[in-house]
Length: 164
Image (cartoon, rainbow, N blue to C red; front, side):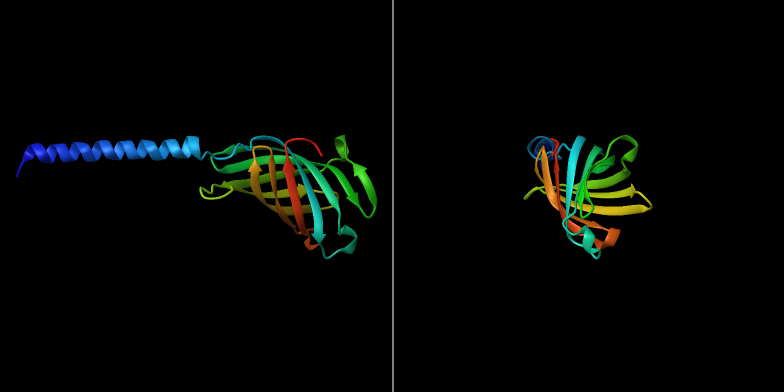
């Protein structure tokens, strides 16, 4: 048994392992980073299906502030606009309803990243729950679908950095 060759093999394996670890770390952090979603977003929901017909084609807009802690997302939202069968309204100040947001980022190395958000809104008269499944298109745009417990609504959702 040649101990010189043995130690050379051990050192080569350790150096290769450290190099490979650094390469994977670099690829994850620099080539495939988690999308930067922290900050202010404007979200628009368009109701497609609902058990309550007056909500069909309703448009709701929110301003949301979110931040990320690793893959976890937290934040809050305020309803700022509505078009429904009862008319068009902008909400300001005390008229706005607030929601708490939680969610996470699903990192996809071979496709677009996804953001899943769950919000509980303290609406006029009762709480409501919404779930959003968003595809990250860029640092300033996400699109997807929503489901709501209010009148069994679902539809499309768009999130962007600029106001609608």
